[in-house]
Amino acid sequence: MMRIALALLLSKVFLQARCSIRNDYHSFPGGTFAFSLSAKQQRRGSNPPAYSSSIKLPIHRSPLKLFTSVSHQSEVNRPSTLSFSSPLLESGYVPVVREYSLGILKYKPLLLYIPGFDGTCVAPFLQFPELSTEFDVRGLCISMDDRSSFDILKQTVVEYIGNLSAQYESTISDGEIRPVYIMGDSFGGTLALEVALELSMRSKCSSPSNVNLQGLVLINPATSYNRSNLAKEAPSVSKLPQFLYPFALLIKLVPLFTDAYALPQLLLMLQSKALPSIIDDAQREAYMGRQAFSLPQKLKFMPRETLQWRLEKWLTAGCNSIRRKETLISEILTDLPTLIVAGELDNALPSVSEANRLSNILRDVVVHVVKGAGHANTSGSRVDLTAVMRARFPQLLQEDGRTQSLSSFQFPEDNAINIRDKRIKMKERAAAGRGIYFGMEPRYDGADFGLSPLKYWSPENFQEWNNKDS
Image 1 (cartoon, rainbow, N blue to C red):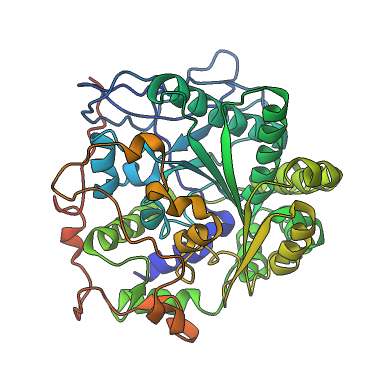
Image 2 (image 1 turned 90 degrees about the vertical axis):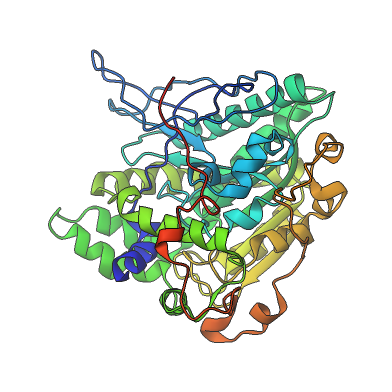
């Protein structure tokens, strides 16, 4: 279990989740479902890579092509892959699988999570189940050998959102445009800001626009990278000899991302003394357990060359791009509701001061500071991110916070739909906790022991996916 604890702490810095779902169609009656966006450039004469899986579920709607593969020319001659996945469908989280099988999931607003420079969807995984009560949660995953430029990353995300929105408008809705929210974490915050600017500029040039961008969420945005501790320490680490590189990661970079509460709170969970307030039933605990067990298979060490590329081509290039466009951002995004979530004890980036600086540029901004959180734990157990988003985006509280199509949907009688109370702040007991108990609550079942791992994959807690082609 301690290996899992260490993996959780280190993953934000130099580990990579291999989250790739392969197939480029979304078909319904008696069909299958899978979605990804592959951006790959093969060496001449090489064979295309094999992809990990496809997802199959019976469904009750008309055929809908979701997205097609696109290729881009990377700046170096090597394969690179970008993919978009549904982390909760991947993990077999029962409420979301049921919503999908009933044809409900696609009526929810789209929430696209853009990760930090590690390229994984690991950091906010505790938040995903509660976020799924409001959103169809998707995530961008970036392979460790990816050599995309910052501009290619931006265009890939913009095209993905545009295609999803166009297909929703033309295939599912009767003239309705699906609400879209973008959430960017660390480097993903820089990329999310660029994506929001590009989408907004396109919408002003084309009337009507098929992208209904309703909100932007920036978590410790790396728009402050050029004046950060990370910028001071990381470049020298990336240039060390190979035999010294892993030790320098642990000694110089890991402390920038951690805080005093992450490991003690994890130990509370392992000892069954408390759980994050957002993990409040057996299905969510089983989901959390499955994610913990899967980390050794998902996580991947970040090579020195990859760190060099991402520091220069992503963090530095992205930060400089935002700085050059601040006036344009202020003009174009002045009316876009924005939430900035900052870790109070972020040592990697000056996130609190940067949130305040961005507030003067974006204008329609609410800043939420997560008490006691370092960089890697800002979207972890010390925040109820969905509640903060409901408070910031009041449209989520109206008509089930979803779309008009979902409001008129005929729900089954078995109460199996993923709908919860619409709280707009952290649960009272969790908010009153101090130190390691902030954000935590006693176990939902009052048990002295945690849910048995044997129940993580039980029928009531897990919906198995068939990943074989047919």
